[in-house]
Length: 63
Image 1 (cartoon, rainbow, N blue to C red):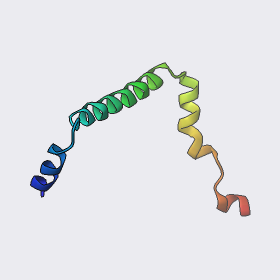
Image 2 (image 1 turned 180 degrees about the horizontal axis):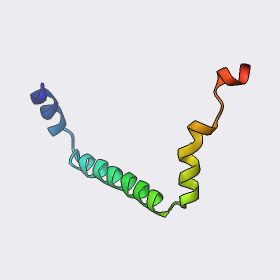
Image 3 (image 1 turned 90 degrees about the vertical axis):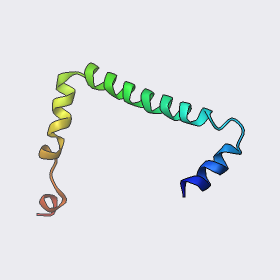
Image 4 (image 1 turned 60 degrees about the horizontal axis):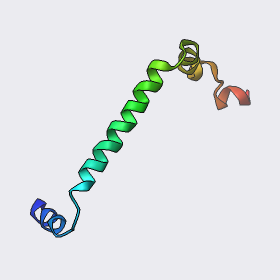
């Protein structure tokens, strides 16, 4: 199966740029996520972590 994919990809001009682009997108996404987590205020993180506990469920609202 890989032979068919590799053969088709070798015929495309400039296909070697796609792995580089995907690596840059992957690295950028996780870098931004890392920066967000470490620069977020502790109060904001705590409020986000308590959201599922504090919000009433649909069953509780109907009663």
